Image 1: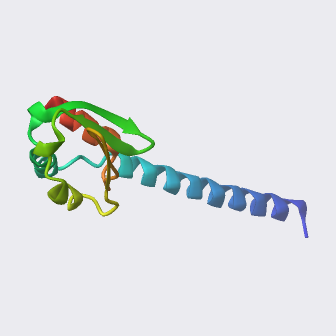
Image 2 (image 1 turned 180 degrees about the horizontal axis):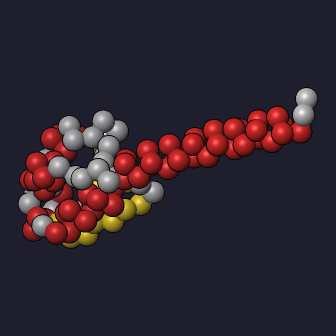
Length: 112
């Protein structure tokens, strides 16, 4: 086989690998641009007992960590319906994992 056949095969392999990286990169970019639904944030705020009950919102390892003033105002059962992963409550701190980006949820809650 001539040397230029090896060159052509090498270029084709490089282009296939490059195309794979581009597809993965674009898929991640598209996924990260998902906007948080306003009705979701409204329901989340309501279930947390209103925006006045929310003291602090943090992101911790992809989860939302919400500190509330009064846990008795929080509707934990309805809050569980917003996530398929469930919630974890310690004192006045609620941790939850949602399908949407945790940073986007945090920003949306802070805007309210």
